[in-house]
Image 1 (cartoon, rainbow, N blue to C red):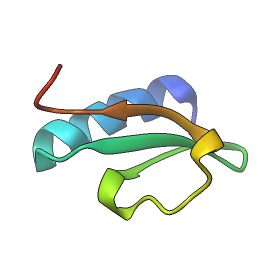
Image 2: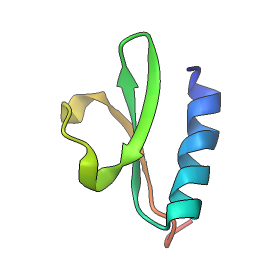
Image 3: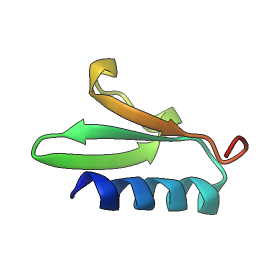
Length: 54
């Protein structure tokens, strides 16, 4: 997934679930998961979306 698309999806996920979401570099693209479920390398984090602090 491209960075631009991943950013839109991550923000949408954060606002829909009302939880913090971590956007990270994964292999050949980017992925987003709720921050509480992220168990990857901290250096792969691109951005953390907080729906309570837009």
